Length: 290
Length: 168
Image (cartoon, rainbow over the protein chains, first blue to last red):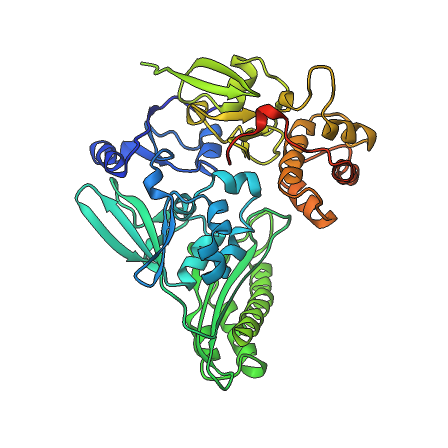
């Protein structure tokens, strides 16, 4: 089908966008890359009165060093994030996850901020950002606030964004030395949403024991699932044998995956064990090689 | 009140001015307003990829982009590949390797292959398969499309046509 009629504004500056959002509140919906919103419009599942198209707000498209970490502008295309030297050098887990988002033509348009604000629980980047303990900057005309990724996702396709707010920046701190990361998923076909995906970050000490582990899953519940118990199970041990077995069980136990036409909840839990094991092992291997 | 906006699109090197409603999809603008029906429309929700075109040198699904968003852009569609009656070498490779049967997916497959070979003139089979995995074919089967892209690569089929020399 075709999109329903809507009012359309395309501000050129972030301040202009915030002014329009402040004026129109929840009448207005932000159009970023459109790779999720335009299908919803075409199906008429979304009927916003007004679209605020931020694609010309080029000041929000960047990947740069900031306070020792990396700041990603919300309008950065997924393809640009995947190709950025900064991301490749410092956050290879992000590159690995980006390559699994849809297909190249989707990533040419799809933005980092749009993907996160859409908050599909099966989507890759939300889980990666939760594992990275990223901080999201939410701007409105009355100011800015920063929110931990884990607090941003509140439900299926639901976030802590208030009417009038725009996600403008994602901040990721530098990872400790001897940290390896891995993002792995299982999907029915290349480019599909993951049945289950796992973002794992493992930091090893000089003796090869886990000094810090962070694990987050997608496709595992209403929001990205952080598997704290699994992280504790790994801590202080070599990431193998019983510690790994226990972590994998805890990771699966943290999930509450949906049943749908693609897979049952029980099958997704089984996959979660399998993918968590691989992701932890790969992250640990990369940590050792670093 | 229905808004309409006049936009400028450079399509295959030709400049067009067209008045569109904001809700006009780029694919409908190309097909219905400009009469360029070589770009096909299939699923209308970004799954099949037959509407793939290049916007400022990068493939996009034209059913997932509003025409107003392409204001000022340079667009390459399947009509921009052939030079008059002479097929583009990429199209010849598709013909020679039987890379199409009903032809519905072909415009999208050609645009994907065009971008792939422009950026990576000698892709391996896995790279070809990854590139065309973006689009669906329901009859030829993918093997002959993979063969066609491989053949085009061997023939160095994709130096860009002049009018498509646009910034990425």
